Length: 421
Image (cartoon, rainbow, N blue to C red; front, side):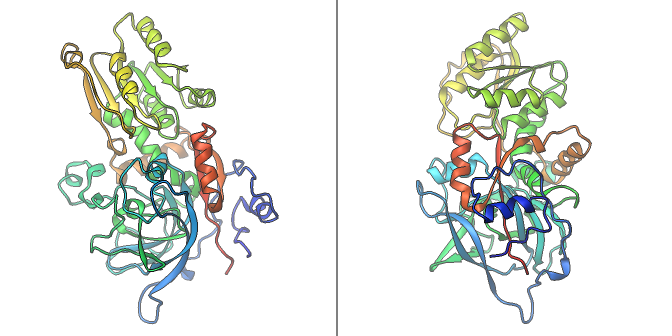
């Protein structure tokens, strides 16, 4: 198979992978095609095929590993877009689905962070056009529901089928072996090609590398927004962030950009603590007790203004530690997911007027905040290249997630390979 590598800055690496270096670390360069030819993309219509084949990583049941297979993909219907993906982020949320920690309809095409090119459009599409470079928002933004119209696009009603992968008309676009496959968050970015609602599409400048762009589909705005929007960090404040992976690293960047005086990170993994300093952490600790003792000392007992929980798996102890770390009128922002529960005496909240706030997508408005974040990246104020620890082929997806669980990655990225022609 001849891969279309000449148009990428990772071409040499892919040629080596083809020769047998399957374990090559692809962390040396960002990647964007030199040119995308809109005229070569197919449009649905008279004489067009009703479906195409695509390679995708799927999970058939909770606890089963990711499996790379070929699926049939329908053409886009009204207000839908077909995307040719070049990169997809390995977010922890997909691992929660695969492990069965979060409820999802199976079988499912994984992936909800992705960047690529508009390959075909259905009738009525206005948000993007053929040939546009784009990222997918893991929560769609219809622009007209109660929440979108009041500046809360992260709560858009069009996101109601995230756990089924079912389109608004009650059908699916992926099929294989007589079964319908949903796409995670009605996306499925672990597929070379995907059909999505135009509400999930955000056009981006063509100079943004796809591997970097994929990260602003979820992890970057979720972390950054947890500090800037959900917590509302202000200049001079003290912030404690629990967990410095793909989301937590961006909470660090958000808190630093918002002007926090102390950006304190708690993570047991030394590599993640080292990287947290790159992203703007002022102090890092391996344990919550070390961080708590430092907060008491540096604030003269007043404690932190904010605690943000971005650990890989939420649990009771981290919630308890975060509540203990914030002082009067302090806020605990919970972004992590898992099985943790809040088991505290109400007096702990009432006496100090503490607040516990849940946050999804960092309370971001993706149609506004994704371009804003890419603008900060272009100006050098937001570090995105540094988030990518390693790049993987689709067939290496299980290794990518094992690396994440082993604490080796801040963020791994799948690079989709496409045939010449």
